[in-house]
Image 1 (cartoon, helix red, strand yellow):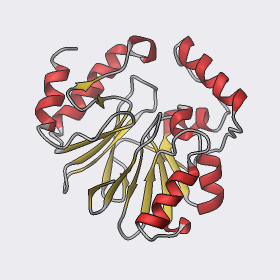
Image 2 (spheres, helix red, strand yellow):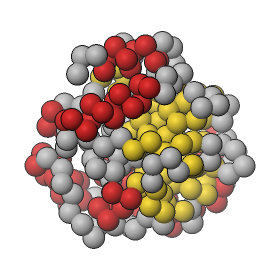
Image 3 (tube, helix red, strand yellow):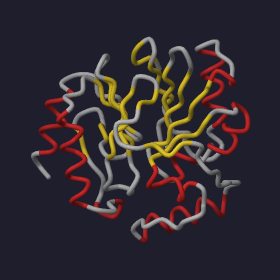
Image 4 (cartoon, one colour):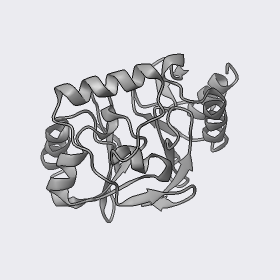
Length: 222
């Protein structure tokens, strides 16, 4: 679905993915294992692009519903993979996650019943790095290396799992998915301070009206 002419949403059953178009094509997150066909079909059939057009794959955090199709997409596109430095070793499988026990159980279960393969990101992102025209914003709380990506020109912010929108209100994570509650609250405030025009999250629907006000209203409930 077209959000803007250069921003497209590929709705996921469990996690959303996004394509940013420009001089090169950037993919935000990869969905669950087996999602690569949905992404490539959208790129080829809707956007009339080619797999090799994807030059960068950015991961908002290390969870498998966002990295599940990374191995296959990297192999097909040969894109560079970028993730925040604090999640790189978890994505590569070199370091265990510090997730709450529920998330660790779900991750192990998904890995057992899928063909998930670890892969080491090519780029370890840091705060204020630029990916295309999007600024990296470190938003820990869900994971240590969670990020948002903000473009001040079009007002679009990708927030990963830090915030959600269900079509009525902005929400956050249930307590059993929060790694660090105080860090998460600060991350929501950081996102709010950018006053974004459009919020695109890892789960839920795009928020394109009254975005800044709704994020601030949610922050005030924390």
